Length: 509
Image (cartoon, rainbow, N blue to C red):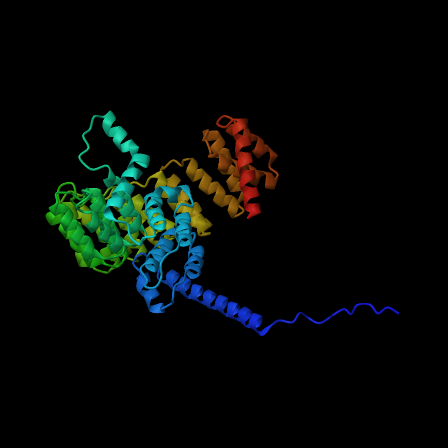
């Protein structure tokens, strides 16, 4: 009898060395994941432009390795500015040097879209040189060569324009590429690196006003007004004139950072030492006034208003809106009224446009009591409300679900002889259908047809749907015949297709 070969059902025997190797790999992977999580969490928590991410990373004391850096870069692949900031910090650490794969990943992140390629192309050229030459820094001579090659390849339009218009360009062509490089560093909040590079290249590349603007914006971005002012003063000493945009951006940045005193000092610098090109505009004053209101410094606020009016900087419609909106959002409605009174005392009484700006802010924030108070004030001072005034009030009341007040506003409008426009009818009809007052809505639709008003196509389509819901075939036919005067069947088809595409895309989500 032949005995079949024995079949072993035992598991494979693993040697002690193999077991310890597997365990050590497992431990290594866990350590790597833990370090990645620590670094990523610290980066995200301190990733704001003014956050001191580098110091926070230093405090962690994590030993860097190439796999660790690659993992963190992978997690930050959609945040190119933060990724490059981390990459730069890692490159400055002791006992660590970027390998080719780290450079490749960083270049891929900075050039992953058309927008990023355009913004960071010159930076990618610098990184590519560092990777190929295995160096941590780029010598000045090499950087000049990189800048020139970049200009010859991507900034030829500047030279072509100068040649065509026979303009003598005094600046070196590479300054444009250099400014783009500094701008890329500043946008990644690496302003210290940008300024170090600027100082290193100062004697080789002649800086222009744009160079100083880039550095100035950079220091404003990281909320360092002292360094920003040093750059500004150096810029003026060299004969470069900062424009309003430069100052306005700085003041706005300081105000948003809560550095209102520093912003006020910069405005005073503009007023006393600025040129005609850089003197404060109504926009400058508006930014500063709103910041002072939000900071509760009302005396300074009204003092600044006096300066603004005396200097001839009268607020336009957009500036008025910014001022009023800033005050209202800060809960300073009384101060907004006081601002209107102050303007009137100085000989600039508010007109219907000013009142409508104020009213829009109140209606957008659904402050119905304040909106009605402002409306009554308009009537008291003899300012005749416009159709836009009533449209805003009616729309606000219907959005708040206060249909009776909306209808009363409509009656008030007719009582005062203000003729409703198509927007008024659309708001009213929408609101009446919404609160189930079908008869009143259909009556207003008849008025639209009788007056020969053109409705926006989306509203026309919406009203047809409402009529079909209630089964009013006569109303559908009448409205369709009326709107045929304004819209052709081709447009109707296009609109229907667009709506179908939108619904399909939403369904996909």
